[in-house]
Length: 161
Image (tube, rainbow, N blue to C red; front, side, top):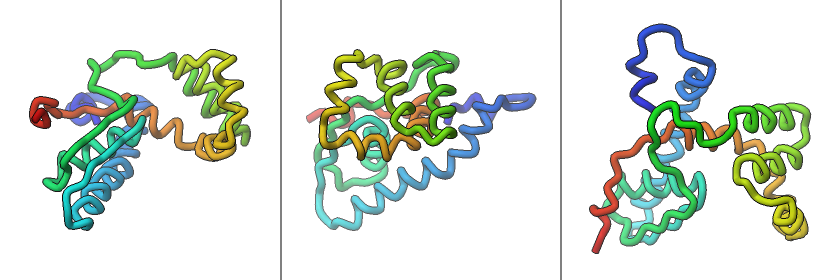
């Protein structure tokens, strides 16, 4: 969560309150990854994709048992106020989810946030994994907020061999 939220004088915006509200959820998910890593009892290699890249990175930073770390399509710290995607896109996704239309929410995410072409979206729809992706659509708003608020002091040089 950006320090600016904790240090802010005056009322928080709705987006800032959402980040505060979700902070324990994201913290628990990250810390539980470190506990799993440590419970294995030997060194591990981690691969994290998308939101999982944040969880893998933060788990690795909290455990001495990670040998290799591969992060794919994760996020990175950006200056506060930087727009990663059009805000109305996330509003549209939330509206679709509220209406129970998970497929439209996922399609909106692919089209307006991931910037995937209509042809590529149709190809994704044809894959056997499509129903599973649709089922996970409700996680999109939470993960996008995590991307927006992610701050890390990770130094890739610490992992160089």
